[in-house]
Length: 212
Image 1 (tube, rainbow, N blue to C red):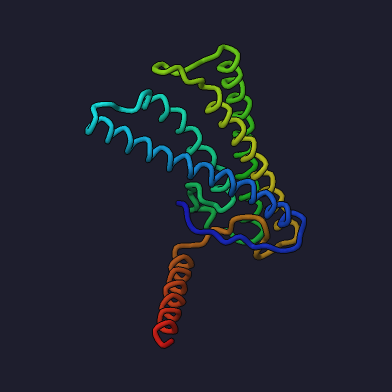
Image 2 (image 1 turned 180 degrees about the vertical axis):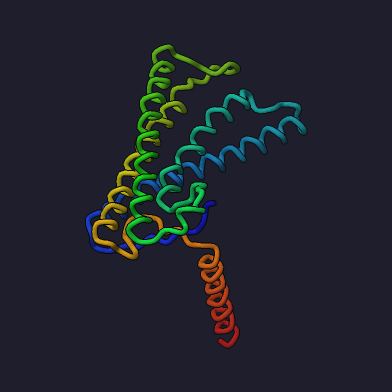
């Protein structure tokens, strides 16, 4: 499952690096959101152009193919920072403290190894496209920019995973209850309580505004 998470912040080195790295991840995630927005505009222009003027956007499919890599990968590290990726925690959810942190560290280490392999594979794919001058079929868009996004974002994900591993091993060593710089996934009951508290706060604010 994927659920809401809480990120604890303190003055430790790993927490400070986490907050600095988050600025880069948030910026890249913003660019990914803008890519989605441009795709929507392009789709609307293509539909209206086809229906009203019988003139669809030239190379519409080519543009869509290139944009897909941007919105699919630019937010991957940001999502990992907040524990937003799909995960199965039937077993992990029953663990606590040191066993939990050690298991999470091992999971991140496994993801780091897989991501590192994918970085080299994706980079060779980009390099081949760049050297050979690969382009799209319809209007001849160069394909290397979208292919470069994949190894770059996977490399950034690797750095995020290293921060996660550091945070979990630190939590394991000091036997911390709420470690910094790692996503602490909330259970379904905790999420429900958090949402209820949010609704209560909103209702209180509305009551205050009404009285004023």
